[in-house]
Amino acid sequence: VRGVTLFFFTLYFLMATQDIAVDGWALTMLSKKNRGKGPICNSIGQNIGYFLSFVGFLALNDVDSSENLWRPLLRLPSKPGVGLVSLGGFVKFMGSFMLVITILISLFKAEIDMSIEGGDCLTVGNCNGSGGRSDTTDTETLLPKKKQQQDDDDDDDNEIDAYEIGIMETYHRLWAVVKLPAVQSMIMILLTYRLPCALSDNVKFLKAVEFGLSKQTTAMLSPLIVLPLGIAVPIIATKIWKGHPLKQFMWAYKFRVTFVAFIDVLMLLAIRSFRGGGLILGWGEGASRAIFWSLLIASTAFQAIVNSLQFNAQMTFFAHRVDPAIGGSYMTLLNTFANLGGTWPSSFIMYLIGQFTVPPECTVGDDGVEVCTGGKDAYFPLQMVLSTLGCMWIFFMSKRVQDVAELPDDAWRTHIGESEDGEEDVQEYKKGGKHA
Figure 1: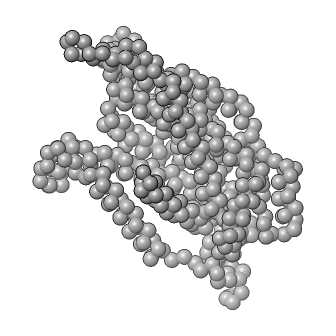
Figure 2 (figure 1 turned 90 degrees about the vertical axis):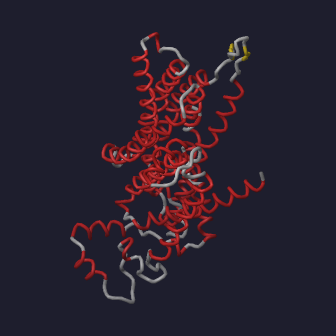
Figure 3 (figure 1 turned 60 degrees about the vertical axis):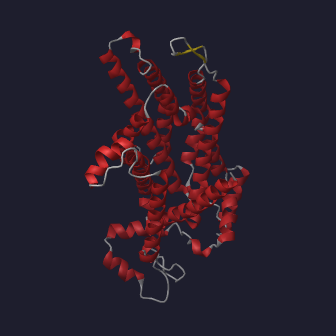
């Protein structure tokens, strides 16, 4: 256990370090007006990666698919009962692939030396450094008038480069960030909103498999439904809720804790009835099969839509509000609380399911058939409780979410090291004069 714990600690430490670097890289690569597009790339990339790693592994590891499809297709010798790839081999390959990509980026991706005065010319349009020819000529020659105006708008932010801060100052600023009322309000939202959705997020498909849904069917739903929606939804949502990510967030959340939860319950009841050898509502086999597949597809699709909408809205809001001086660390700080908000409800709901579920008593009859009676499934009453809790969250927290959305960019910045006026402003925020 200690060895596994140490391994995963090291693994997640390295992943978190790279995550900070990638978040900061995205913020410096994209101009301010394009930062909202970063979360779209993030969401699409994560869905493609999820598809390749999860569905790809299941397809290559499946014994029947390997023997009947992949080996004949790749002209490999027959090996009955053995998958094309093993779990160990797949992890080694993907780990090596990730290392190779990281090394190639470090070797061939040239970055501007920000320690050179005026070195940030290409990233934020600030070409006012000395020691070189005038930036006015270059800008006016190379960029159209509209582009010059956009770059000038970016210059007005007076963004500080991370190299000027240092590690200790970065942590000092992160602590100051946590003390900002705006960030504290966001942390409260992130740590609480996932609890009413915990059953759908963590237990629904486990319960579906328990009721008789095959793992192959759940794996098949990902490339057919989850992946296309994961790519399309962020792009469409950007067009609909442009500039209002938290409105998108709340719309998806209201839909998630009411209608999606209701569809999930119907889907599980249909699986339990249909896979248990019975018919749904006493209808014929054809109608029961149609209802079964319709509810399964609808539950999977709606879950994918609301997940994508909320993740995209969350990342878009973060990208527009973080202080670029510590952009990568700031983004990771908020994402850490967002991940924690999804992790603790998972453990809590699993505990509740275990506590309130009463297993049936099963006996084997004289004919050798197992007969089970009694028992109580905690999923359905817990879903009613959590949906009620979700409606209460919407009632009490909607105003706070709206207030957070309307806060100016200044409310999310510490102003450490800036002018005295800036420090006076942040003191006013800390005292609650301007609060979320």
